[in-house]
Amino acid sequence: MTTRSNSQAAGANPQPTPTRRSAPPPLEEILARTGGDPARLSLEVLELHQRLQHAQQKCAETAEAAGKLEAMLQDLLAGNQLLCRLETLRETLLGPRAVCRTNGVLRELPIHPNVDVEQLRRLKPWDYVAIREDVVVGSWSDDPRLYASALGEVVTFKGYKDREAGLACVGFGPEERIVLLDDSLRDEELLPTSRLVLQRDQSHLAIGMVPAQHTRSRFEVPIERLQTRLQDLAGVEEIAEKMLEDILLRIFHPELRDQYGLDPLKGILLYSKPGMGKTALMRAIALWLHEHSQPLGFTVVLYVVKPNETKSMWHGEDSRIMREELWGAIRARQQLLRSGPLVQIVVFDEIDSLGRRAGAGEQVYSSAQSDALESLLVEMDGMDQQARDDGPPAYVLCAGMTNRPDRVDEAAKRPGRFDLVMPMPEPDRQSAEDVMAVYARGGHLPWYLQGDVRSQVDPARIREQVLRPALARIFPAVIIRYKTDTQRAIDVTAGQLLANVHYKDAMNRAKKRAALRQLRQVGVPAVGFDDVMDCLVDVAGELARQLEADPHMLLRQLNVKVPVASVEAVPMDELRQHHYLRLQTA
Image (cartoon, rainbow, N blue to C red):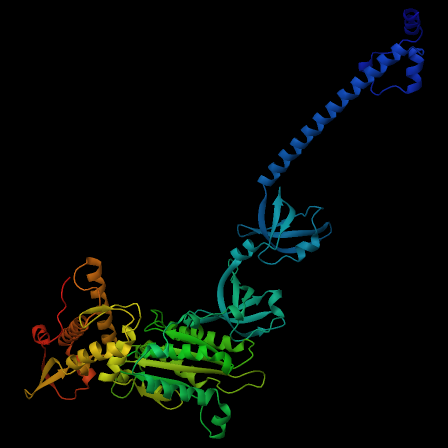
């Protein structure tokens, strides 16, 4: 029966093969075709299920192929992508078009419909647009790397040329230049100390400003890193006390200064022979003020100008460095918001290196010799040391150090500039002992005293048994002799020539000798009297040889006014004729 009904159905209602149908037949058609035969109906459903699986597999393969094709096209387009700066947008009858600069040439390009035109209008000069196949397809903005690559030279703002048009005058080397301010700068209140950043490949456009709080001079020294304290210095107590009195009286007690009509303290000039610790003293005073700044309610900033740091081979550059890199940073610091007074200390090491102006009978080979000095004097005259109505006062204190006060320009030493002119005290035997005691302290340092090696020695005992007797013998020792033109022989002792730095050097040499003995395991591993004595003799003898080779240095240090015929150093064998405790070898 089943076979007959199948044949009758096949003859009465012939159907095309299933593989040629584009869609499954409706359920009624399937039932009519099978004639209600369950077996034939099962075959039809199984065939339809197989066709469905096949179609799903083909769709998945087609979708995968389409995704790969799209990825290939995207990679191809991305590889041809070009980044260009957008100069402007030009309105046309067909809509806005982008004017882009590529390789220095301006090109007008269409904009892809998916690109936000308003976003293009907001692009900064350092932002880019993406171009594919000569069509603008996107924008590149807010990228820190692009901004960093667009930064060019930093210039100083001089004033407005036309503020409404965004034109400003800036210092460009020794000359001035007109630049166009970016929209982000037009609403800023620019000051004479403001530093503007030009665009790298378009130097006529200022695109940013160096924040004032980040403006820092190359002469500024982080004061918190200083290690020299007043208690580390010896023989300078009197001069340090006098300097601190003047600073505190005139700066931190303005009511007394005003009551007695005292002028603000502007400058201090210290002079001495080399090695007396002038720079170390100013660093120690700056550190003392910094350490006491919180209870006194002020801030201290230190600048150190080393010899010839303001010199340049270019004419006019000396003056610019002094005016902009040093004093420009000082004025910028004064513009910052602060809660208390600001004290800025400017230390000029070897201030005579700035040169001097031409005077009567003096020869000047170039006007550039005194450019930095002229700028310094002008800046000191223009310093504002008074309290301001809009905030706490700001003070500037200049300190100049020199070994040759005769080379310092007279205009710099007049009142109103370097007001306080003081010589560093000459070291006597007591101050020399104090200096050596500073470098002899330390409980871990071993000493050889009365035949024993000891640590944690009382400093008073070291002074009494080692330092004081050694200095008593070296101080009156003659180390150099000179003859005047009348053949008068004059002896010069070590006490007249040795400076603080020599006593420090002798103490450090003595400690090194003991350390080498301990390393080599030869002799006594401790510092003894003979170490200190021998090293004092060595330092004195080396200084004598140096002065013998350079008699002018000796004459300057002794302030000799008569003509000198010859200078002779005492032989080292003669210097070594002293009695001391001989160390016993192990």
